[in-house]
Length: 290
Length: 95
Image (cartoon, rainbow over all chains, first blue to last red; front, side):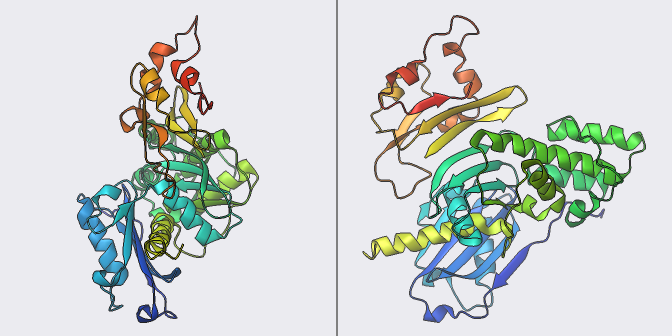
């Protein structure tokens, strides 16, 4: 079989310091996205485990899979989890979730936990959409906009280019800087047209790296335009899969003249993490604690 | 919260912005809009808000450029029914 360059690495993590059996409140968030799905488990509001896998054709199945992966080898089972919130594109298809909450609300809440209360502007570069969110110091959304009508500036666009250029997706960011000088961005915003434009550039004899640089800067430019509508206030953070692509991140930072905060965890878990935090708050509400 | 519903594409930016802090859920916009762009219900983006809020319905979010076109002729544009109907002044358009 031909190598699948677009395949990004799946991940899973469990805390070694926390024992779930000591937990009073066990909450979970499951984010079923269009491309990837994540599950996060919190013990008393502390990050205990997470998993990040590709979404299959069946949303409920993908939700179950990431949940199982997050609990794998921990002895934790689903009946021990007090509350689960579903979020993301397929949020209504998480059968074991008690409540569905939008990814906008969850991303803000998750980013507030991941990056701290100073984060004000969040750019989520997801698999098939792009969200710009402002939140307050508690992670409550104050302004948002979303572009889910077009794949430009999304993870899927990058996957298309990984295949076209035969470059493994994790290497794309680094390689996009291996150019003598930054080329003009590709002019098409649409992924499909950008791809045809790139094919043309390759035929003209452009190196892969140069095409990649041209595409990465076009992608950065496009999301910066989207951000202009809500304006970027510091601190600024990028979540989602593209946050791992330095080729796009550094170009966004250069255009905005603002540095994005560094993440301590997988940037793709922000939505599920926010879901788990909401789940915790909802248990507390049920128990009359808040 | 300033909720932007809509999109940006190659032809421009099409967002209806609802200031949810101003919106009181009165439903005037729901009846004022000739094509039914608005609905009032639970705030999807603020799980702890108890009061209903206006939003752009799922059906229209990806085509509001076209849904809103009848109220937005190129010339002789009058004020928009949705914005007129909103006493708290919670609705605005980006185009």
